[in-house]
Length: 263
Image (cartoon, rainbow, N blue to C red; front, side):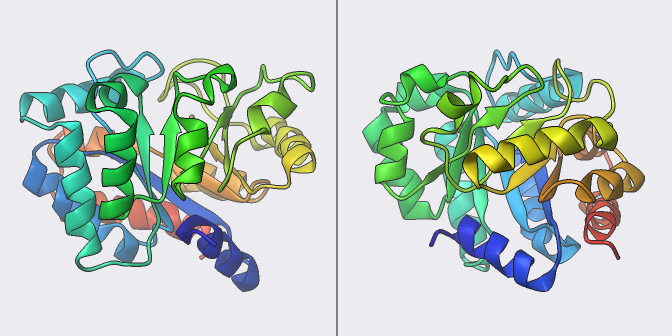
């Protein structure tokens, strides 16, 4: 079992839902970002999504776009993102880390080189939002063969004809995008999300985590009531962007995690 699979199994045994936090690698600078990442497990985060900064993040809203620009301006790269994971693993060998981003930086490094480096530093999974299932041979299949979970996004427009293709090589969990549009836009509605989560779970049997539009402890608790986990990114990244201290950012993360865990 991968770290991701072990974490979901443990959460099921505990009767809890997963709380997944997204932060951008290198935002606002490498040292501060690493301090935040290292503090996430202590704030109650079950799975860390670590963003790979990229110049053209087409699925992301203003908050995460700005985070990527701050990170790039501070000199962050894919290679340094991997080094962030290595540094995290010096003190935490249990918390799953998923790299989330776009294919261009991986392609530029080279798929084989990237996968070897990712496995070596302790990455557990990948979310690459601009590679559709029709391109699975490009990265998804090699990633699975290397022992990395490849986590696919499903959306409100993923109908029953499309869903089996989306799930075909997906592993770890499914990330359900609760709204149409970019990150940080709109608000998740638990009543609308619930039947979609049930449909996706019935089709693939994997845990389903819901992201996009979850910004407060209240919304985290509501969505956790109908999903296997909740993902929060923009609301956390916004606090980093406005200059909150790592301690204040982590306190906010803890309020979200407590809500998702039913505390």
